[in-house]
Image (cartoon, rainbow, N blue to C red; front, top):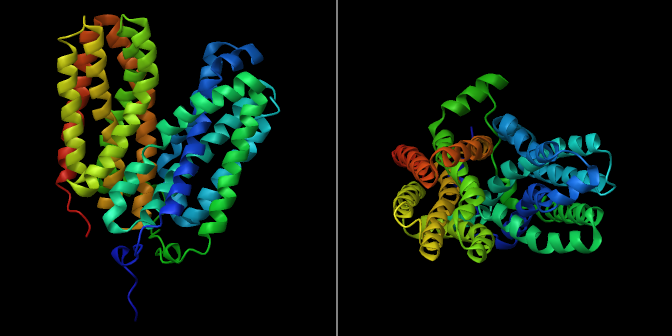
Length: 402
């Protein structure tokens, strides 16, 4: 009786860089589902004449789907097939953007945002799983580092090209352009990947047991759970730091520069972490170094609060270290996972924990800042780093799959 191929026997003989870059672009197009509403927030308020709370809810509705269905998405992708889920999610996203381009009534727009959450979740679960399969072992951490930059790149591109489209041609053109981009990349990936021999080698997922029993196994699996905890404390912190810290800078010109530079710095940190994890140390150790760097930077920040330029430099260093955490977390999953099904489940859990952190973090940091100012922020960052260091150490104790 022939043996079933093991996970380690179905790796790509060489890294397929073109396909990986296209999958990265797919991730960028999915993250633009957040970014397009972020850059057009004021325009949406004026067009629909709704409250800021309702419009803000339409912005966060995409992430709430990931918060609820993150783990189940990974399970579904392993059953249905990663390429099918990816292409279906991209085409769904394109269709919803086309509907939004007609500027429908707000209740219809809100429904499309919820459905976009399903689209975005399908991409962030399936695309990194496919990237890992298309990467040779010597490049896997590096390609995960590249993948981890997709969110920051999406916001940078949307802030540049998207804002120009919005200012010159309006909301309809912005949404229509996004629909064309995300649909096109979906079709291109289907054509290029549907007969890829490496993806044909992916073994069937182990789907024994009922849906809820499988879900509980995922939550009890440290190979998926620990990278997700490492990621959780990053998302708790980064959104809050990017939102609130520039407001602590007294110099208005420096404040404006920091609003532009900080997202770019965190994206650089994510790519840097992938490269370090590939060539210098294990991803778990990278996460440990990153959280330690954030903690030291926060302590220094509490000592130089009155010097604007020095304050900005230390914040930049802190955000660079913070940006290294998602690169390390993403690299941990293919390093620790024993099969593609476990990888997809890990990415689904990562998405769920990430959305939880992004939901809980900002109000917690806002409360600390209002009550205690910079000292409150520093203490909270140090607490977060303690947990991040703890889970990085626990993840480092797991035996790596060869």
